[in-house]
Length: 470
Image 1 (spheres, rainbow, N blue to C red):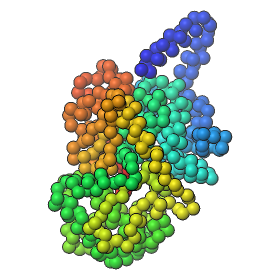
Image 2 (image 1 turned 135 degrees about the vertical axis):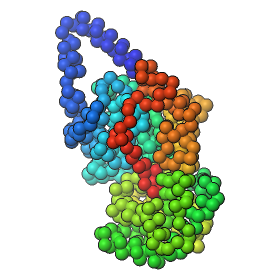
Image 3 (image 1 turned 90 degrees about the vertical axis):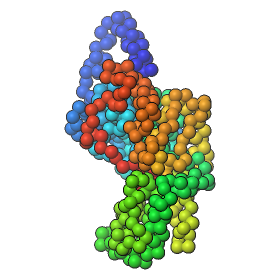
Image 4 (image 1 turned 135 degrees about the horizontal axis):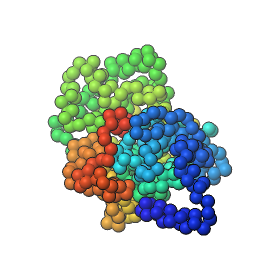
């Protein structure tokens, strides 16, 4: 792919050098320039900091982006990116979480496997990558994909080997949307646990998931403790309010502690399966457990702090997108109906300030789904068997080329390629190495899982999402 193109371009340059004498001297100087200086020579790129990392250079940078890619003259903002530099002769993995940017160096699974560079991008409108003033109508999947496209364009002259996009959860969605709008930027995409909420009005797949996941005994135990949490609501909300007052937490978005608590409880079973395993069913308290034990379990699984203003506010951009394009599953809870005080509260509009207008685009997700099924190529989707966000997965059709959808047995929202069955892991690994154009490297064998040695710091797993968010 790009390696062949690079050879051809080199041949053309060689001919030009013979004709033009010393014309190659400038190119040689550029290639020998320190990578930091090469990056900062890019128009719109500015330096924040560099952190030491064994075997790499790690930079945190700002890149100037248009607020509106359709009207570039309508203002700009600075978007944070990070660069884990291995070498300009290695493939590059373009990673995004779909949320903020970690200031710590991390290698995604594809980066570990292909021994490449990693460019990571903060999603627009997550602070500090937010225009000021913030025109929220410019927060959509096409504008975000265009952010990635411009970053790729800015860096591809330096990193001219193959590029693969990746991300987990909302990051997997982001990698997919980027590929849909700019398919020629990339040689492959690995999307982990990416929900595909095609029709926001039809959520039966999620109801089916919760009625069949794990064992009847585990489901019954979780439902019982969820109901008991509402039965004891007065006692627990009083404790919740006291804790919030002592810690300085507020509830303006949710309305008050009682309303926030109802969302905490509604998310309880979902959050359990998102982050825990079937083997953790034994840790679920019985319905007659002491309130202290019940309170601790609810806090461990859902997290009381997240439903305060201080917990929710950083994620307003996500809820805005959920309420305008992405959609959000609406799960039936018949065992709780007689105890609920605020039906419909667990919806994106609740968590977005009222002065920000929201209108749902029902065409956005069907467009993505249709493209993946009929026109996508070099796409790998990885799901966890017991992850509720995988209830509506992406699917590839007979018109898709070199694309796969695999599910890791018993895995949750942290499912990776390494968690797949042996046969599927082999197929996924070979596909990724081929897309990155490293399949023929001497270190690769039929059983290769990665081209880098494990590093407990660089390969530390980052939690994908939090509670009722992908």
